[in-house]
Length: 70
Image 1 (cartoon, rainbow, N blue to C red):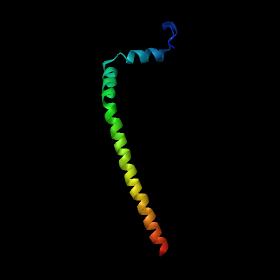
Image 2: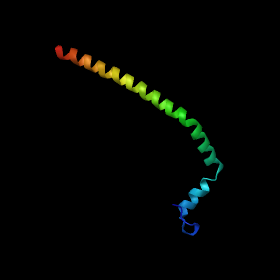
Image 3: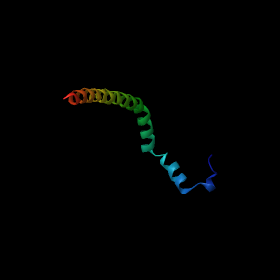
């Protein structure tokens, strides 16, 4: 809940002033537009890491079994 202006803290005033800047507005628009790409990249990269992790686990299992037999 917002306080009346005479009770606002200095930090709240600074935050409100920063939200009026061109840089803040530009960042908000760019982040909103880029978010789907960031999310898709994160998903794809996570899948790639899981794939190689699976290969690593399979190799460790196979090599561990063959090493234990000797």
